[in-house]
Length: 483
Image (tube, rainbow, N blue to C red; front, side, top):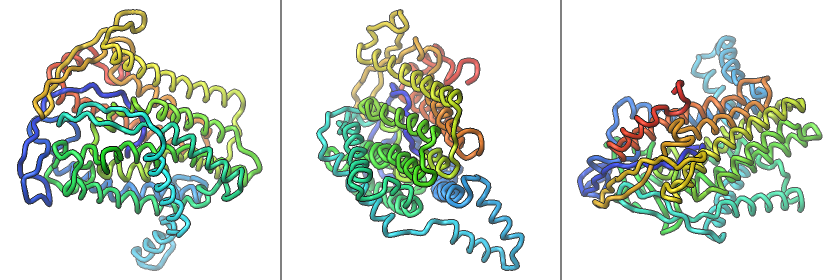
């Protein structure tokens, strides 16, 4: 699901044609949308893609619940719930459907009033902060229909305000325990799912009935796929309240470090101190989160904003998958406290900092080249760039450039090497006692490899002959001589 792995700002290009035509489920009249040659998320999709989209929407909530149950009842033993079910089926004289039904009733967390109150209070607070906290205005890349949209960029201020208030009201004023998120984790999971599915359906019908930028919509002819990947490119309420930036950055990423802090507080309540492994996880995650908000304007030119439409993939992913699956390490360490040796602690911290350095240095090269229009030095030599043109569906020709030296001459996505390195360090902070904490780096590997494929398809469609030349100059997608 949409996570915040931050990928390189896309500099893709191609031709699109937006027209008025009859297309799209539930649409009985001509509506503007993207047809013909276009870039962005897929539009012409197969039956297999539709089946896969439906399967993901039905199973991913169960995956999150499975991991929650594994930690909540089985000390984060990833096989625990499955072995319990197998044992019950083998030992029960009841029909297997009855046994499975009983197990599922225990398996799913119980909805609670406190869980719903906390979650929706959190959403409302973050929405108010997004609207009210002073912000600078950033701009995304030009969309296939030719829009260059403004964005409210105040995430770093909101992050600090949120965390100061959280600790002041919990540790300072004692109005609630600092472990409140941990203490309501199961109830919050149900509440988050309710919002994720509501947001998915609301966004789909909004795209049909009152889209923000109708010409940027995409219809595949499949309701399932359009719900999964989204129809609208940049759904908004009014001019400024952008669904993609808000839901990824605020309920999702701001919560990331709060969740870790709450689990650290729960660990302290359980064993009387906070382990150095928990401290290390909090440090590594905080570096990643703070970098995201410090460079929030840069995020506006990444694949999440410039490529993905807003459907289940981002709506539910930002609401549920991100806060629950990206924080597995802190959940694990509450159940399984780990005291790391000074040498191991230092080595993992060093690995994480190395990953962060690679990630930031690679993207910094791209930023410098763009801001100077290629008139700069990279690694002590004049930057080598490929100058390109692309056409949006309003018929306008735009110019951009692609960097083919420095890290970007090594591979097309060397920043992902940094992403994966710091992700591995986050997992290694939990030691080697269980498999579950390492889910994150496995997932990130799959996610980023898939993003590489999607980015290549998008850039090939947008750049055309320029992308072919770029691929010739930089043949390696991730690691030289590997991939």
